[in-house]
Image 1 (cartoon, rainbow, N blue to C red):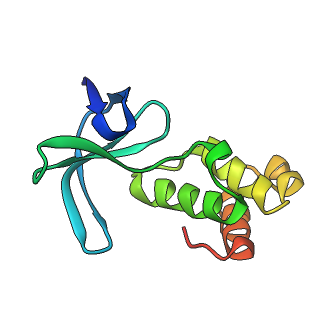
Image 2: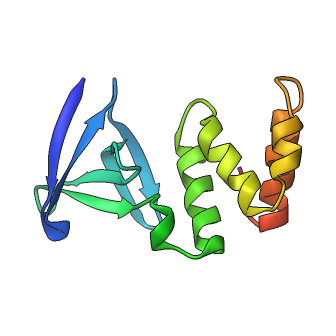
Amino acid sequence: MTKTVQIEWMDKSVTIETDELRPYTAGDDTYEETAIASDGTLVAYDNASNMWVQLWTCRPEDYPVMTRAQTITENLNYRDTWDYNLLEELCKLAEMEKEWDAADGDNFESVAYAAAEKLGVKI
């Protein structure tokens, strides 16, 4: 399904392309419908305000390295499958680009986990 939502407080539209909207808990808040938008933003429908809101974004220009690493791992942990582009970016942040480039289908996970550990995040 493709769904277009207006994030009012950001005054922009993002496109959601997903087969399902999933629940997501952020701190004390639980959202029943969330999705990753085309620009990497996690958006959620807020029943209290009857509108879609931005929970976090994945644009690299918005955050320093540590916050970017946290954002990448939140995004990875939200998904059901590995996003290889995000794993590669995580390895670059950890200065493990050579290890990632040398990784294959048998050991890419161990490289990704080592990068996450180096950055102090958990996937």
